[in-house]
Image 1 (cartoon, rainbow, N blue to C red):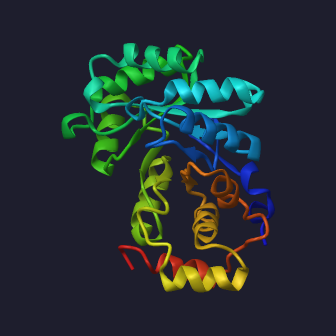
Image 2: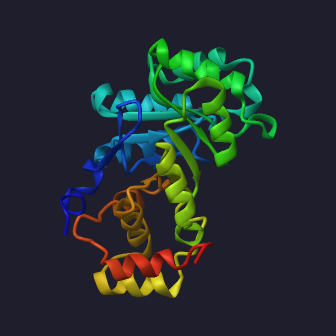
Length: 267
């Protein structure tokens, strides 16, 4: 067992290229609205989560902000991500200002372009993201659902590489080439929909879970952590929010990691 594996899961993090640390586990809030979103965020913070992921398109930033302020957790202890919709290009600063106002914050920790605008890399939008970071409105900047070609275009045009790329990711989507490509560029890989993108009823996951007395969801979370890939599981249920990260005593063997990797698209 390495020190990384032995650390409490919610204390694990990785450093972005700009020098900011991002927790490896966060709460995703896609499809959560109103009180459901606020309750989920509140329960997550109470359980020890210190990373909350939202987006302008989720229409829940106000609820997320309400829960953040009600939690009593110091602002500098919570890593907050939001995302700009692709259709907001040309209105980047106004979009961020609205997000900050909705959440009652003076900055976010990470701001992402949610999708490539019109299928392009969005160079002009990226320049506005760089400016927002320079002005302290966000600590870190990145993209979501981008290809390597699109990331490279942003770097070539501006000299600034996205610090993170948030993509759909799960054991069934594992691709070592994608992992290596992100790391070669200094881009942290962050996965969303870790359960939806791959069946938790796969025999490989169930067998490993049975060996460890864990759930398949817990195995998937630990698999992300041991790959040092940021993961943002989502749930509206308090018990699942807690259970998803109850993996302190779960360490996957190298053989188990390879077996899970083998479920991927490049296997």
